Image (cartoon, rainbow, N blue to C red; front, side, top):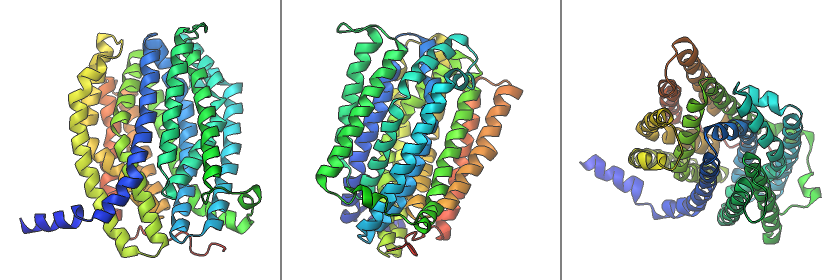
Length: 461
């Protein structure tokens, strides 16, 4: 009893910790909720057209998902530096890192756009062999590609602002983007207000309009506010080869981590796609729904990365260890609560979709599986994305993520689907086993104390 009281006093009574965490995490939670809600709106609106249309958009968005993993990895890698440099109040190097991020983002976005424009049918065929799904998805992809460049710029600025502790403005701008997207979805998908009924291509056009608006407004806010990110072209390009090389020693493992994770998720999608339109629709709906319940934890993991990075940049290593312990305990508690809520709400959520009995049955079982392991998934996100990355332990985070996904999750999923011919919910359960192993290995790394790494040491002034 005494130990429980001591733990409570140690974890839950530090007002400064929770004040800073909530200041950073609440706007990010709302922003992620907005993004997840946008995906839910897209899925529901497209779902009114039928299961084939859901499958087409879901599969086409796997290409965008891989692009997003690249952008998020790049932005998170830059964010490790920006948070630690901000702990030292080194604005000059913050602008240099931002220049590396923006330059890389533009080049990668253009590469994805060109590749997607040249072979949209080939990209769709990687995940599904239904001719109608491929045709609809390719049409959607060729339009939505235009948004990639603007999305890349938005993500770089979002992560950079978060690393400085600025979270409210990006959240508000994302809210405007959601309203814009939902409105134009209604107009172009169903042909309202005199517009043609474009179906899935209307959803793509609405996304492009929203992304262009979001990038433009966010960039204007950055420069109007004159923050440490309001850099001139000269400041963004004030880079030496040695600085770029040192930067990418940290950025590249984070980038590779998210690419490997994205590729693994694409393999999962390809496996599910080969199991039929009902399986794809069930997984698409379940992933969209579970992401809606995970928005809170992305806010907390973002707060963990920023708070730990700034403390490590300031040389406060013991405080960083204390913060890490608190974030882990909070993740487990929140995961249990959200898992129970997801399980309770899942029947009502599925009523919003036009599903066959089989697809609904599969979806319900998968949502219950996700609910049962929700606390482990949330713990893993806080540990990998928040604590290890914020602590600069990016190589170990890469090894843990890569091993569990490619050594456990992907092989088991392939075996379950194609060798043992298991139903979709059983295959999905096999994929979830990677989360369990990831949590065990990650906990061992955290207890070792070797995850604290000040990446700004040796960087040029």
